Every structure is written in structure tokens, then in C-alpha cells.
Image (cartoon, rainbow, N blue to C red; front, side, top):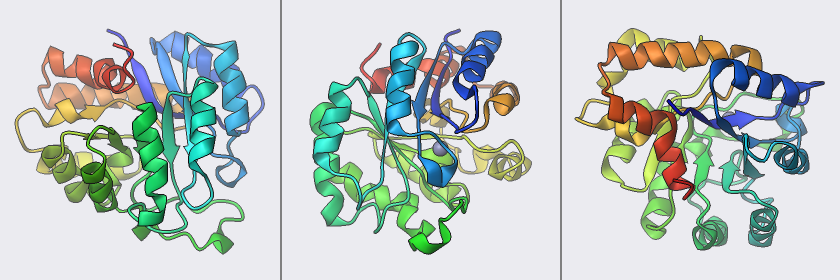
Length: 258
Ligand SMILES: [Zn+2]
């Protein structure tokens, strides 16, 4: 079965890219959607991702990082011209749904670039304390006005909202253009959610059809994430067709690569 990691980052660690590709080879991950969140998240930059994309065009799908309030629509167009196919969005200066950010979403819709939004409490990073970052700005419900205003744009909620699981799940149930990943650290919110049972939030028939696979962890933890996800799908008796959607078909459809 084809596997695409829809949520991967290029960490600022020597030989990270080579190790990531090697891990993907070893564990049967065909492609990953890679973004660089910059120094503040101990990551490389968009420019480094662009180079990675050139070196591994068949393995990497470029995901361009924007920070609403700091990024502009022209930049998105330029990124698209350089081969980036989706956007990764985090730490906005105001709430995601602030009207002043709408030109960004309009541009993304025009270029048909799906948008992966960080949602939930954000990890405090180096030098980030002074940035006036509020996780409230990244509440999943902030995406509702964007999804409504841009019906031809596809949105992906990262981490099923971390601790706002109920809101994130109801959004993917009620809005055709909102999806979610269930990424995160192996011992983070996923552990809590598994203890309770994810079906508490993903309760309706076909809920897993709106999810997509991603990792969002350091390369060395990717095998564990993949293993946990396979066990999870087994535990919830997820059928073969839904597994294919989860592991590759959903993201390929959003990227118009199917
Ligand atoms: Zn991430």
C-alpha cells in the first residue's frame, strides 16, 4: 500500500534529510509533505525545503511555511512557481480567521494549495516567549469561517486539535473541505486519546475517511508512529478502502496528484 506522510518537518540537525529519506525507504513511506518552520521551531527554512525538493523530486512534496501577519500573498505565488504544492500554517499574529488574513487564503484557493494548519496548544520554542503567541488563535473553530468563505480550498487540521478533539472532529464531520491528521508525539495527546478511545470523537460512520496520515516527529520516531497508526486502524476495524484514503489517497486528491 502506498504511504504518504502529509505532515513532516525538516529539522535543523546535520544529515537530517538523508536520515529522513533512509527511514522512509526502510519503512515503505513513498513520499512526505515537507516543511521548514525556521529557527523558532529548530527547523530549516523554506529555502532549504526548496533545495530538498530539487534533490528528491520523487520523494518530497514541498509544503511552504507561512506565518499569517508576517507572510504575504505574493510570497505564496512565488512558492507555487518554485514547485511548492501546499502550505503549512502556524503561529499567526492574530486569530486564523482574522479578516486581514483573507488575502492569503484567497491566494491559496486560486492556486489550489491545500493548507495544513497547526491547531491546539503549541510547543514553546527557543526565543518564542517574547512573540506574544496565543494558542487560542489556533483553535480549530478558527478555521470554520475560512472553510465557509473559501469552499474550493481544502483545509487540514493538524493533531485533531490536540486537546480540542471534539471541535476538530465535528468540523471534519460537518464541512466537506476540512480534513484532519492525527499527528503528534507518541506519548502526547495520542496516548490520552487512545486511552479514552478516538471513537469518542470520531464516532460517525466513515469518520476515518476524513483523516490523513502524517508524522510530525523527528525521523527516528517515524517507525513508531507508523506502527501505532496501523495498530489503531486494526483496533477500530477500519476497512481496506478507508486505509487507502488515510495512508495516501486523501492527500493525493487534495494535491490533485491522483
Ligand atoms: Zn507540524
